[in-house]
Image 1 (cartoon, one colour):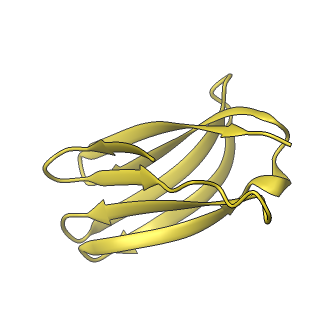
Image 2: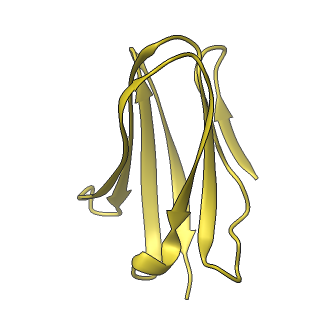
Length: 93
């Protein structure tokens, strides 16, 4: 499992579920803030907005349906307050 974290904002990706082609993306928000989680292709084009709302401090998990994406490399960016994290996601078919 990849993990990118600081003292404040945490972003994790669990292993993909190869049967359902879904991946769980877990993150932790240290304080109430506007949270965005966006998916980009390798060219930097936004592919999807996974989260865009105010969330209280806490741990969250979303499920990304990789079956909706063409094979390739993607990046997802979590932003909360003044912090952000970026991680890579590879979709295989």
